[in-house]
Every structure is written in C-alpha cells, then in structure tokens.
Length: 114
Length: 113
Image 1 (cartoon, rainbow over the protein chains, first blue to last red):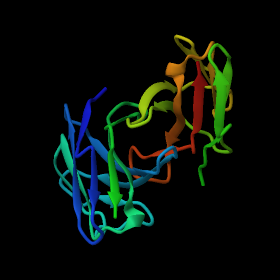
Image 2: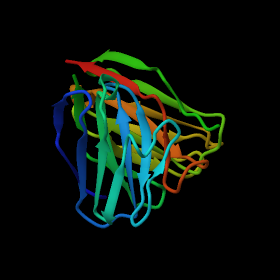
Image 3: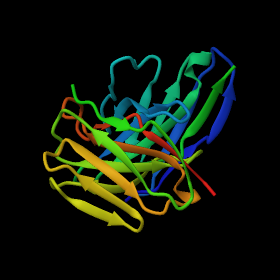
C-alpha cells in the first residue's frame, strides 16, 4: 500500500485565480493520477501524471487549464488555472503500484470558487 | 466502451440489516476492485477479485466475482453505522493509459443506528 498526503485540504478562491494542489506519496510509485469528484458522486479522471514527461489528459481536460508536474516518483502537483465557479469540486490524487492496478488515494482537496 | 453499472444508487437501512450492492458490466474484466469512501476522505481499497467465481470475505463484508468476470457483488451482514459511505467498484480501463481505472457511479449507503 501507499500513504498519500495532499495540501491544501480545502481552499476558497476567487474566480480568475489559480490554485496548485500538492500530492506527496510516502514511497516511490510508478503511476500517479488526478481525479475530480463532486460530493457523493463517482470519480472523473483528469490525467495521469507521468514522471519525466508530459501528463496524459483525459477527454475534456487540457494542459492549459490543468497543468500537472511530476518531478520525481513521490510527488506531483495539479494546478487549476483561471478558475470559475464550475471548477468547485473535490480534487483527489492517487498512486498506483500493485499488480491489478489498485490505487491508493489522498484525502482530497475541497475547492470552492466564488 | 467499458462501463460499470452499480445498483442501487442509494441505500438507507437500519443497523443490523443485511444488504447487497451490485456492480455489472457487459465487458469482461481481468479483475475488479471495491473501494469505500467516507465523507471528507479519499476512497480506500477494500478488496480486489481476480478469478471468476471467487469469493472473498473481509469481516462482515463478502465480495463475489461473477463466473464470467462481468459482474461483482458486495454483501454486508449485520450492517453497522460505521459501514456508512460511498461504495465504488472499479476495473482496469483497457482503452486508457497504463494503470487507468474505470469507476462505477457508486452506491451511497447510510446505516442508521
């Protein structure tokens, strides 16, 4: 397993600003992912954070809006850029390492954009 | 397109009752995972089922993988308020990047004391 921490745990931001969320894993992992989740609903994958190369984005998500960094095998950041109220959500990072693709999740960052 | 459909979407029961949650697909999966997410937390992996027909038990939780590996169920015996949460099934996304998972929409369980 892996222990994942995220910072900040929550934030309230003004529209038009940007927020960077940090994700730290307690051990080296091959894969890291970023998700978005509306409270009580399922997860939507934003992108796979690749170490040493550009992130792989899912349909509907673009690098200009959600730039991602992955400088090493234990750390990644997600920036939510030029925020609007529609970006209000819970953002989760996860790490995948095990045989069958199991993922271990951070506690999430609850973002409110006003 | 791979889809995982979970039912029921919502479930509200009294402490001590039994319940079953279902995860169905028209696609074959090499494995399926179940996660539980409590409010304010990230999902926590409960179990991975790999073999068709497999049954795994985790205390009062029993997980089953269908013989054809297209479906799975989670049965909770004598539910407790601590079982309250969002239950998600997930499986490998064969059309996506390595390690990507497909998640069902989840079953929101509330166990009242």
